[in-house]
Image (cartoon, rainbow, N blue to C red; front, side, top):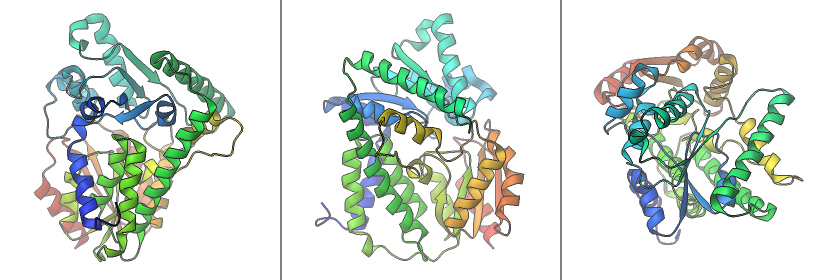
Length: 381
């Protein structure tokens, strides 16, 4: 593959795949794959892969309808969560046989509970959801009790997947899945390194497209495509614009990055799952119990919006911004997602002389590209 495509061609392929993300489950099912849908980055995809599934992480559509989600969740959730709920109720993701929701944030807790309440109060509204829905609760505390609890939840998830699939997750299958996911993360870490070079060699928009595609296609296919890109990376241009790091509300669309980078800046990092954070930590492979290793990887993942202190999150963001060589940090926050706002004062302290621009109260489906461009351009000037 690498002998036939230059870097630009491979990047274009990633963008095309990203644009088709809402059709991923239909395409995979049509091609004979068994799919396990999940919401949230705390779901241990190694277990799904070891069970013979292709994991697909569902996401919201900022350009799509969210009427049902808005009606049921209202101001209790941000636009992304409302969009995810709407798409679930409308069956917009394609045929789902099972769904796992993790507790990455309190917004996902609300999502799960509204689905459970609808099953009892109005079953017709959830007719297009699968019967198999599981809430995976993972703790991130530093205490031994958190680790023990997570092992119990991990074992319960493994046994549930075995019942759902009719397959036994052998140690060999789990170790193979760990190796496959780690190999993919190592390749994405090389993509991160390209962003962090001086000058940067990859735009944030392209990097986000590359890393995001791992979440809705087979890991081995994604790894082949990333390898082809890395083989051709020597031909990438040098990007000398202001170096920006993005924090705030996690997002999984490219229009925000495009608007920011139109200013001539280059986004060299971010601290949410669909970007660099998703490949930041490997599963330890040389362990007696591979299940423990998988659960520990998610337990000790870098801080996110749930179950971590604001100080820990702020320190992580500042550390990553420095490692990326950022000249400034952009914090963009959606309406209905208050958690990142609590971090901002501590982030400013932790960042020291790296300035932070807060862009608050943004509508998930209506971020105005021109206004965003103007705000970033004025800040950089």
